[in-house]
Length: 422
Ligand SMILES: NC(=O)c1ccc[n+]([C@@H]2O[C@H](COP(=O)([O-])OP(=O)(O)OC[C@H]3O[C@@H](n4cnc5c(N)ncnc54)[C@H](O)[C@@H]3O)[C@@H](O)[C@H]2O)c1
Image (cartoon, rainbow, N blue to C red; front, side):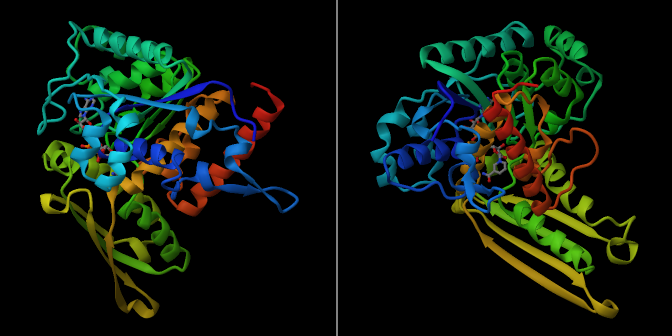
């Protein structure tokens, strides 16, 4: 199989449960100790005209796992091995076998602001007179990482703690106003915005896996277009929202009514702790709420969804760690309005669901950049709870999103095969 030349760096702000589960998984797969379940780029294929299938990896000349180097930033000094031990997602014996490569991944110092993440603090933090100075420091980190690790290209996937929600303001409107804000230390600029600004300025594609809605801000679309760099977000679509995007469109296609959907979950990892702060929870609530609202369109179908109620609740419950338990109660009604209920009890593993998404996003964004794509990549909506639109609204039906993902892959494949750039 032909692959793109040169090593790829996958850089994650946040070396926590999700990112270390990815790093450890890739190391375990390289050793033949695990399989890449849940990853389209590793296991997926697309049928061609003759009826045979071609793997996505060969269509896009994706780098082999051995040609990927991981790095990142965190407010704690722990290596990826120590962070994975702390996250307590993976089997300890397997983790010990991966000690050497994981211990080699040491966090670069983070851009951090306790006003955005209130319930944790750590020592590994950058100092800078202005937010522009911090952005410049992240740019130097990226340049040094590429040089030291002999990587040809990089992708950033934000896996840091959920930042408190902040409504968009004038500073976020244009690239010019944002850059002035960086120089003036505008308080409405969060660390995630600084990482993303720095990466895009370096021509490094960015995916926002966190619930923060900043990837929707207009100045970033402008910067991504100006630097000809792909950008996508927000919030990995993993557990309850993944199931909603599968189930809700089916109910709608059968013209069944839905009067309410209550989603509750308990989780006890560090992400759950951060989300117990009302500001961070608000970001998650916004991100999780959009999907059903757009599928159950009460204006178009008032008889089915005109009085639709949606509740989302997350509780921090330490005994469960990363092994989240989620309950969904769905109140539906059918022929002549007779009510029925659906109950879902999902005992999931948060980071196990998220890790393959990080890998896919990184490899697909790198392919997008190689194929000459830039700006908002809305075909990656398949992976996000709150996808950033490029123009017009995004269909939240997972099946529809899978088709646009496939279409984009085919289009990129023909560009890459022809060696053309737009
Ligand atoms: N696991 C899932 O299923 C899932 C799904 C959707 C979204 N997410 C989001 O992904 C993100 C990561 O989740 P996780 O479970 O790995 O959380 P985690 O708490 O285990 O890891 C996040 C890490 O980010 C670090 N951090 C905080 N602020 C930082 C900053 N400014 N710069 C660099 N590092 C910083 C923390 O120290 C921590 O190590 C969260 O925002 C979470 O909401 C997770």
